[in-house]
Every structure is written in structure tokens, then in C-alpha cells.
Length: 416
Image 1 (cartoon, rainbow, N blue to C red):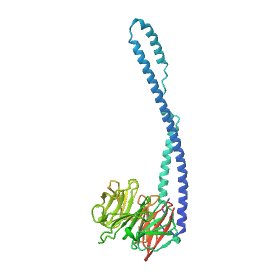
Image 2 (cartoon, rainbow, N blue to C red):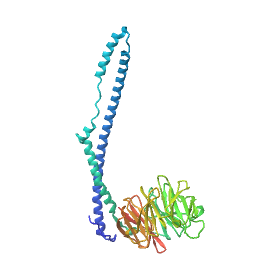
Image 3 (cartoon, rainbow, N blue to C red):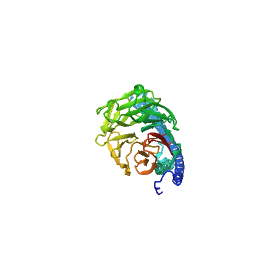
Image 4 (cartoon, rainbow, N blue to C red):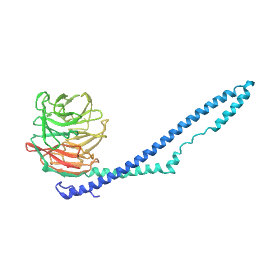
């Protein structure tokens, strides 16, 4: 299938074409999954039968071995008795033992090779399983490269924000948490964009220039700081989902547990380690789940790390100054750097969607760029007035927050 030229989202033909391709792929994908599941079930049943038969065979073999050893032990004892008064009796017993040994039936080993090759049952299942996997992989890759995007800008929610930065979505409730940089607090909206409450604007948990937001369980982590000579404000703040303040983490500086304008945040849900883009210190700091320093990396490769995301294979770091997306493994070794991703723009925040596509907000060109997991350009969504924070929810809704003069709006893009 030829790749369609990127066009504006408002053109109906483009949307209709993509929706048609998507429906065909999803149908084929579902059919293959059902076939694959059926074949997998049959394969597992046959393997269970083999294991059961072999277990029965081993039990029988052990019983036969034990019985023969017992008879041979008695026979050896009788053969060792040469007293004339018992010799005739021993000979009689020895003959009986010999007959018993000959009558023991040796179990036949299950002919698994015959089962596989002659009956062809297991072999056929394995072949079909492999063939389906081969078919399934390109379908999955194709699906991940052709997302259907419908601009529903008529559903924009007007919100009074002042230079919003990062956002995160609580996947349990669907609530959206947006860092309002110049208002010095975080606003919370429901999944329809209705304002619920704000927090961080007073008391012990008062914020100063919040930048990025991420959630884990019932907790919200927020990075804050200007990067200027503003003592004491740079660090990480921890709140509960309802906005209750928990604690402050770190201070301004260059050492361990010290930050200079921290930006992106990411949580490893397995270890609960916290990854922080330490923007002006040109590094990634890692803290443990109890907020102690664990490690740092990237000082040689990074110049202005702005945002960070964790996947199964990589630690992905978006560097603002190059611009560049750096991929590190979990031993903190730089694996790959994708310079400019083939497009001339300055990325700000990014997210990874349910198809493993990479979506980057570009405030300078008023757009969101979408790339495949292989960093191939897929599409560009044009929005207005500098998109910043970006995320995807459980229903594959793409949520973008962006600036519009001194007020801002949250834009919902249906991402199917």
C-alpha cells in the first residue's frame, strides 16, 4: 500500500481512507488472534498429553526396577546359601524367582517421535502457529503506523491557564493534571475537560514554577524551578491525587539530590525508581522509591534534557537544544540518537501512544508530529498557539494543552 501524503486533518477523504484501512486491519487482526489462540490451545493440549504419558511411563519403569532389584536381592541371598539341608529348597525358590523376573512386563516408552512425525499432529500445530505469527507481525506493525486521527477541535475546552507546561493523565479516573507555570499551581480536569480543582497554590506545598507532572498509583510528582538564580525553588514535589501535599524532594544545586531547573519525570512501575531530567545540569538523575539518590547518567550525551519516557527496552530522553531523541538502555548506555527525526522543529514534550508511536509537541510550528516506533514520519497535526504538554489516555484520546495569548485551552484529538 502506497503511503499517503500528509495532509491537513480537516480533509474528509483522508480521514475516511484511514478509517477504512484501520477497520480492515482490525478485522484481520482479530481473526488472526482467534486462530492463533485456537492453535495455541491445541498445541498446549498435545504437549500436556505427552508430558502425562511420559510421567506414567517413568512411574511404571521405576516400579519395575524396584521389583527386579528386590527379586535379585532375594536370589543372591539364596544362591549364597550352600548348606545341604536347604539347598533343594533354595533351588526351588530360585526357579520361582527366575520365572517372576521373566514375567515382569517392561513398559514401552511413549513414541513421541512417531506421534509428532507420523501422526503429524503436533508438528502441524507448530507450523501453523509459526505461520500465524509471521502473518501477525506485519499486521501489527501496519496497524501501529496508521493511526486514525479525527480533529474534534469543536470540543475544545477553554481554560484559564497561564503558560501551561507538562500534563499527565491518571489512567484510573481519566483525570487530567496540568502544570500551570505562571500561576504556580496544578489544575485538575475530568476526562471531558471540565475543571475539578487546583492545588499547590498555598500552604506548605506551595509551588514555584511547576513544569512537568507524572502520576504513579495514588501519587502525583511535579518538577519545579526557573533555572535562574532563584534559591530553593528547584526540586520535586509530591502530592496525593486529591492535591494533599506529601513532601519536597531535593534542592537547588549540582550534586546528588540537587537540581537545576528539573523538567521531565518518569516512574519505573516495577522498581518505583524516579527518573528526572535535570535540565541545566545536563543529566538524568535516578532516585529510589524512598527518594534517596541511586544514580545519574547522560552528562556526555545530553545538553538540555527536557522530557523523558520509559519503555520496556529504552529510556527515551528528548533533548531540546539539538533537538534530538536519545535512547539509553537500562545500563545507562547510549544506544541510539535520532537527530531532528528528519524534521526541522524544536520539540518540547513527547509521549508514546498505545501503538508505540512517538508523538512530539512543537510549539514553534504549532503542531504535533507523529513517528512510528522505527522513527518514520507518519503525520503532522496542526493546532494553534504553541502546543506544550501532551499525553494519551486509556481510550486512545490524545490530549494536548497549548497556549492562546494569555489564556489557554485543552485540545482533545480522537486517536483511534
